Length: 223
Image (cartoon, rainbow, N blue to C red; front, side):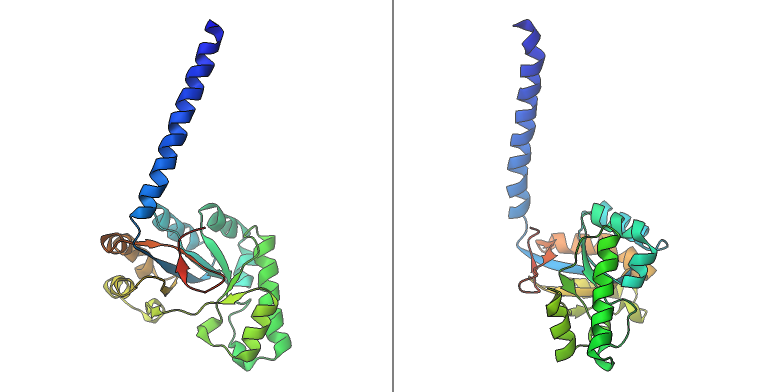
């Protein structure tokens, strides 16, 4: 019987660890009075994606990355890094054109090639779609729906694409309320610099970074 003691001890330790994990999850969930969606457009790239992912991980945040298909095809390692970091990956067209000025066949090509590029790179099959510039019409919506995509615009524009300061980006995130979505981009240095303060601001208001529901297009608890 003595030979079984290490096994019994190991099982007991494992059981305690599982119990601790089980009790930790509801406690963390209870701390969230609501969920908001942090979104970052125009990736991935070898120059910006690693720094953005590091900042998000270090501050306990998850986000939705709306990737361009041409960048996903050129940077498959970064797509996989996004997925491995627990981020959600959406479709942001292949080459970032004004889709409302394109034919249905062109819109179809932009969306379908991006779905394929992201899947080929190991990012899964996106279920969310953000049209470039937030420009959409009936054709864009119908093509997106054909690929099982939910169109996601935004509630708050951080203006980081327009040279917004780090302070202004932090303040934009402070306007988010439960269920809302904010537009940010992965390339502005001011956006990456704002992430620790964004995390602190959300926590101070009892809000957590959530996923975007493919059913409603709103921020919800991670599934």
